Amino acid sequence: MTGAQSKYLVPVVLAASAVVVVLVAMLWLNRLQQRGENQVAAPEKAATVQEAIPEKPSYSPKTYLRPKLVDGKVELWLEAADPNLTLTAFTLQVTINSSGSLTTKATEPTYNPELTNANWTFPISKVEMNDAALVVKIAGAHVAQKPYPLGTKPILLASIPVSNSGQLTAMIDPVNSKVLDHQAKEFHFFDVDTPISIE
Image (cartoon, rainbow, N blue to C red; front, side, top):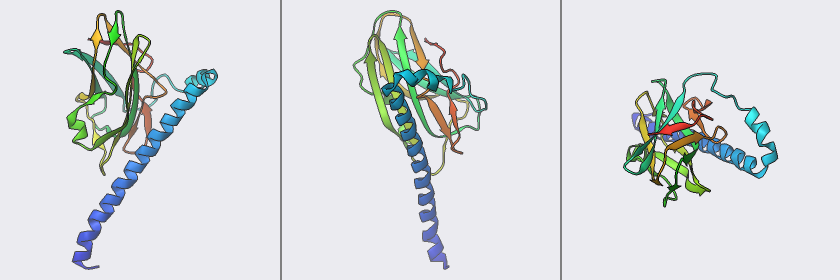
């Protein structure tokens, strides 16, 4: 093989690797979405699905959701307990409740430009009002050859404008909230099924 041929072969190999990573992430997100739809379509089986999910991940790394209320917006921050954690994809469903009234005009979150500029795409992106609760559904995939380094520094994922008159709490859905690392290893958000106070 000549030097010129090698020069053009390297980018082709890198591009092919990136496509494989993206396909794995998208297939994983699609499988999780179908699993969630099946759960909604068959509520009588929901208890069985719930019992099959461990309360906490049995291994590290762990990912935390750190919601905040800033200038009339609920901000969703991600934080990892392991500085070596890298992400390929994730799915998150969080329900936000208020001790008073809670409304929003948003139909999807506003994402952190730092993520979109780093080749993150969000094929599932919804904000819905369910009675008096606000439900946020997000699925993200990192469309790049290398996984995204999360590290231990919190990073803003997205924000949702709200009108609120009480104390806010967030609850992560354990079935529809998971993370896929660079080795295609699936794990849960750490604080699932636990009300998180939003300050």
